[in-house]
Length: 211
Length: 116
Image (cartoon, rainbow over all chains, first blue to last red; front, side, top):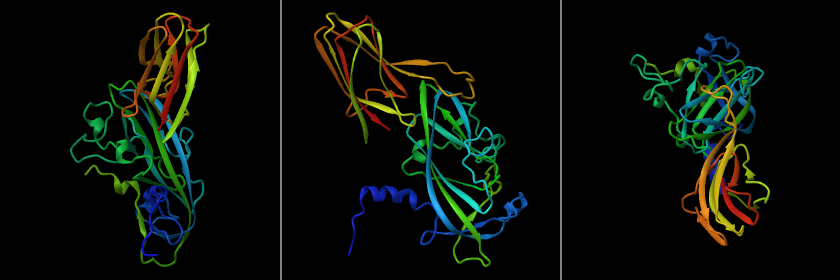
């Protein structure tokens, strides 16, 4: 066959499926950076792993919120969380987070009091109570649409809580915020030797950008 | 595209009527609305979206909320058809309701709603 027509459905599935790991022939080797070891995750920090079993579990969350107001969603297994983290070592969850269209945006925090992204100047961090800084590091629904999510979060057992701060824009009355998740569960086995190709998973302390 | 279509006849005894409740994870866009009034008098109809917001940072104990989405005055023995094919007429978050300025039988509301 010289060519094939990719159907709409296949294309739709490929959009987000090519962004996740899995068993071969998908990208299946992971390395956790050394920082994980320093943060108390010695079982994985600095080590290489192969994915031995993988399955994608879809889930969604929705909230009706008033304008100029926000809600924090803790993704961890804490009492107040929505419980999307693994419960055992040797397992990692790769979560794609997408949003249905609406008049709102999302700011990532980890743990709940620290924004993931910011700028170097003093106090240039997201602040939804500030008319300007509420837009700093904001992820709009069109940045990570539900049908083709681009925001990826990694989670292992007892990792710090990823927190979604969902802010409804002022002047819009009420809005329904719908978060669509594709959670790829991976069982992983440690590799004795570094593989040729792997994905480096960084601890959030390495990702925070207030520099 | 997911579409819901249906018809609701206003009850003669009540001034407000539930039309439908959207699935929790979906937002509705009203793509078509048709009203037929054979009640014997002109009527004012109000279309509402009723919901209880979730707890948020600013509101610890949210109350049931009615948001008016559309209002129309319809003469007796007439039909009004609103087409939102190109641009949706309005958005819905939860329970779609209609109220009349007087208890009215013989008013029929037909709708097509897109689920997103």
